Length: 78
Image 1 (tube, helix red, strand yellow):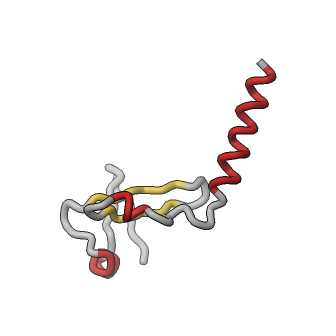
Image 2: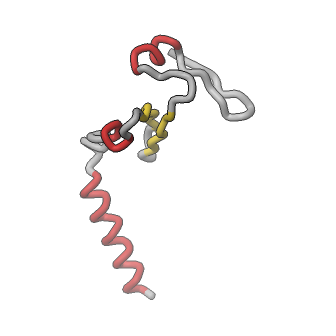
Image 3: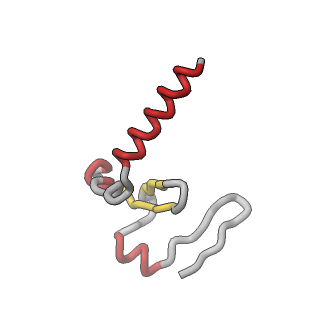
């Protein structure tokens, strides 16, 4: 499925996707950007439950440790 983005940054969620995921008028969506892809996640009544497991397979612990190492290295140079 393919959609366009308007000048105002709006797009349409195709009907089959809205029906499959129960996305109705006024629904909240979370946009997740990992630097390579963008994921749009519908948020239900319990947003923590809706996002649970979404970071699986993204090596978040390794990325966090690498970022902390970069920060320490930068601090040492100052």
